[in-house]
Length: 102
Image 1: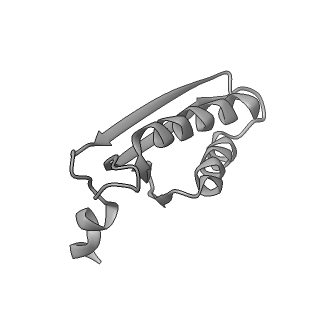
Image 2: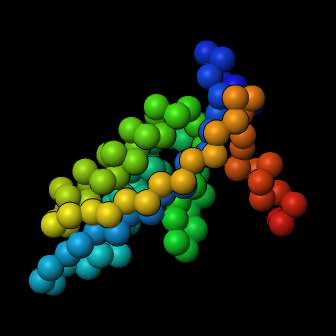
């Protein structure tokens, strides 16, 4: 599956782990990062350990960067980010990987 420009649709899953101090709550900061994904307009699924997105590679990488920046903006001292990429030249979707389980 490719987008209108012929670029493959890929899956990117990522997890942000913000380092916080004091009374800050890491879960609240993760919620802010997830809001970046929600507001982006890409197809996504939030899981218990990571968020998976579907779209064009450059767009998804930019969302991950924005999510990291949002963590820092909201008080994280630093952020560890773990990223998984599923790339296929013909494209790959979230639903093709999980539909048989639903």
